[in-house]
Length: 75
Image 1 (cartoon, rainbow, N blue to C red):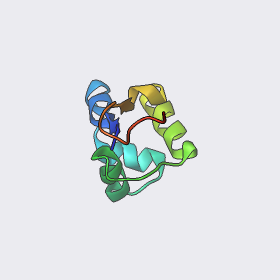
Image 2: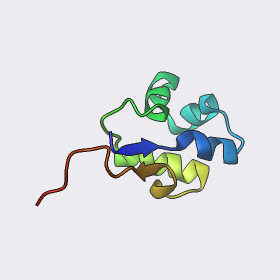
Image 3: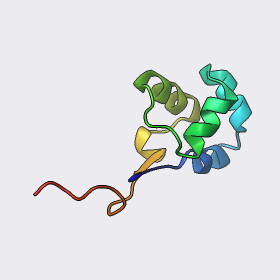
Image 4: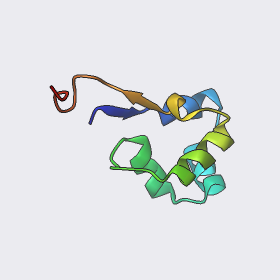
């Protein structure tokens, strides 16, 4: 997957446990774990916005593009 989730980095910077973030966002710890490990295919903008509000960050702080790992660009 060319998009890497860096949520763990932001959690460490904010000294917050994933369990606490899941409770505040209103999602299960299991779903947050899947997001943290990059094993999800998508995320609702509403959920992403809540995470950003709680962690006081921008979506770009949580998601990183890794060029070269995905499909070739359109020619």
